[in-house]
Length: 180
Image (tube, rainbow, N blue to C red; front, side, top):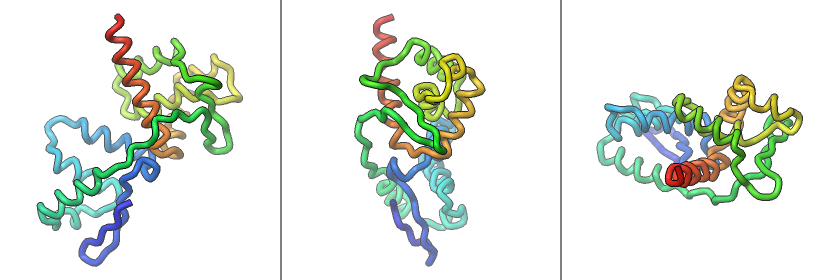
């Protein structure tokens, strides 16, 4: 967490994976993917997501902005450990029992989401991979259920849960492309 004083007002700027909600991370990711927008402008918008008013950002010097970006980017990468289960709103969701392996249906759902360009890809991946222990497999793969669960995860989980799974999906995608 970065504590920032701008013109006498204190702001907190979360910059670690366990401090950033998944929904905010998705907004940050989408901003970074916006074509035709410069890096400095992207960072101003990201800082705005965390509640720093535009008028405060407009008054920063270029040097202060660059220093803040450098400090913001000093992130501790979460361990590569994949959570087996998560609990959200009193419900337990399980990704795997003994050893994590992609299920064919899961990879198809993730690929479909990537092709569609869903804007909440990290929470969508988690919604596909983590199954509600109270539901059947058929119920789990209903698109409306996945979307609903993704929105619940986005608001209730932090980015540190998603990053190891995003890395696994990227690794699996590269291997699959090479083998096809």
